[in-house]
Amino acid sequence: MRSSNFILKSAVVIAISCTPLSAFADKSWSKKSVRKAQSILNMHGYKVGAEDGIWGTKTQVALKQFCNDRKLDCDNDEDEVIDTLKDEASLYCDKRYTPSAGELNPTSYDRTFKLSSTYGYASRTVLPSFENFTNGKEVAGDHPDSTQAIIRAVADFNLDGMDDLIVTFHETQQKSMVLYSDGEGGFEKVWLPEASKSRLLREVSVGDFNNDGRPDIYGHTAPHDWTKRSDNYKKSDTKFGRDEPDFLLINIPDGFKESDISDLTNGNNHQGAVADLNADGFLDIISLDQKENFEGRSEFFLYGSKDLTFSKAQPVPNTLAKMQYHDVEAGDVNNDGLVDLVISRVLPQTNIMSPGELIILLNTAKGIENGKILKVGKFLQDAQRWKDVLEYRQCLAEKQGFGDPYEARPGTSEITLHDYDNDGDLDIFYTQHIGGSFKNRGSIDKGSRIKLLRNEYPDFVDITETVIPDQRPLEVYTRKYGVGRPFKIFFSDVNLDDKADLILSGYSKSFHEIDNGAVSQNPYIYLFDGSKYDAVHRDDTGDLQWRSQYTPADLNGDGINDFVTVRFARKTVKHHVIDTYLAFPWLK
Image (cartoon, rainbow, N blue to C red; front, side, top):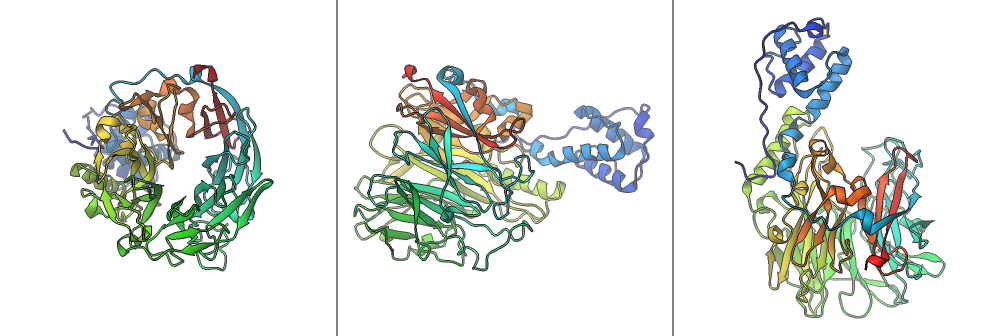
């Protein structure tokens, strides 16, 4: 048996007698359609011989067996039958390399949590819709290319004791929005200043830059080039990447105002962070280049001051400057009183079995750019898993017309530092994914597997298998069935037992489609029992199983985190909506 993320499912062809083929024998198809059908049947193991476009007995028998095995209606007209075959063919590789539901489901669940007995549905906020890859063109919510709304940050921006949200609109050039809590699960929607307009606002960092007690906003932009993806986007005259710099918005009593830092910032960061790197009492900026060959400015650290001016740090070491990054988190990982950085990245295929899926940059009194570099974490322990990934990608290229595959990109993405065992040391939680693109198709970026490195500085020990054992749905890397990589890792007391549980936030719900919903685990919530994080049954999460972007926030100021979710309300308002669930305070 293969030790693998993917179980290879062999197609078994059952011999059948040549009984009368009724409607199959009577079909009169074009040679083009017959060739397409023959190609798909051969691909699935129903051998018809030469793909010659001749509607012979072999093709008829194979088509009948194919349709009967899958309970498909193939007695329709030519075009409908071909569409049915194409739909099946589009999932050929995904089904072949996806584990069965039985292999994905945990052997046990923590059934102590029930959404309906812990949280009550509160309110719905309808968000505007914009067309993808345009200059913020507003469209009807059911437009096929409407953009995704994403919660990027949570903080009490107006100092009323309740958490507010920052919402961005993915892959459209539009401003961001702040949603002020009304205390009952609803929100007042207010647009942020023009400086927040971006083709892709990838990360929002929150911190008090001017030490006035109000949380400010730093936006890390990653403005992709859309000129090849849409005729509706008009590119600016300035050089790509420099036309949308990062931005800083200072929180004032009547809203936000821009502090212009456009001459200093990258304008093409995948993510970043803010922290007081030089211990002078003022926040500094950490920005990561999205691409190692980015043509714009590439300062890595900007040191802040009380008058909101920033100075550039010295260049980072070459070993860091040449890497392609995904996320960065700041925290004191060696307990020396200085803020260090933990960085996730894209990995060369040659490094997947070696330490270095994360980079730790240790701070020093001479500046963090002069700090020691540690490489920690191995992407894979089993070489067979990577072989399966490459086989799957080759299957897409050869069997489903994706064209030549470009290099598969293993990588680590979201990071959160959290002292899970209360020993005084920050442990490292992060997710893994696999990306890559094809000549004839776009990119495929799947995988959300959570890793945990326990901090035993100078060592960081992988204890994932014992502390987060049940997360097989997150290890499926196929395009149709795989769960897309998350963009936040939260810790919040989900079941109100005074322990910090683990929550993933993302906008994929693909796990419901594995084996027609037979996967019983909700892969985004893990309850902490004091020593490990246990799986949660999807039925216990109620409406949450049909929503995404699980975000904990105290919406009514009672000191207990509530649930915020996002979904596309297809049957009602046909827009992305924010649904909220308030915790029952009497349970604490």
